[in-house]
Image 1: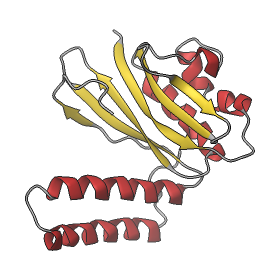
Image 2: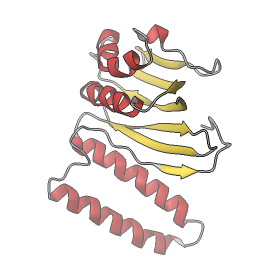
Image 3: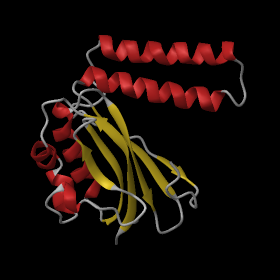
Image 4: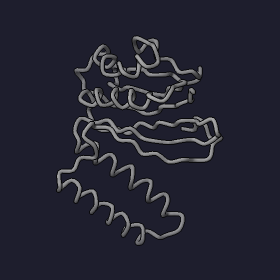
Length: 184
């Protein structure tokens, strides 16, 4: 059974990184979809650029859709884990699976040069999500209370030396009703 997946995000890379190093890091993903390099990393949708390395801006731009099977997530996580040492700063990359039953499964994979930078990026994403969600029902003071508690949880985790995840990548998943493909 194959599932459509859309991956979207930008990763800022160190200035010394060459395209062949990126391709080597992304090898688990590229190999999974049976391509050899970024030039072949085209999206299944013609209006999406695929996986593009902009050397001048040092940016890996990802807007790629393809059909994948069960083990794709592991290949993707291995690729982003290998890409992490080449990143200049942490970034969140959106991963959306469009299930046959019409539901979308949304997740994030985080890439970063250190566990601390990834944890900080996770914190920022979580706080943005919380503020947007709580802003529908509560005022700034009440939202500030929740944000303060979440910050305490992250600070406690950091003080205990508990990384977000040993590999440098994590995923968050939420099931959403279908029908909102490729809105970014």
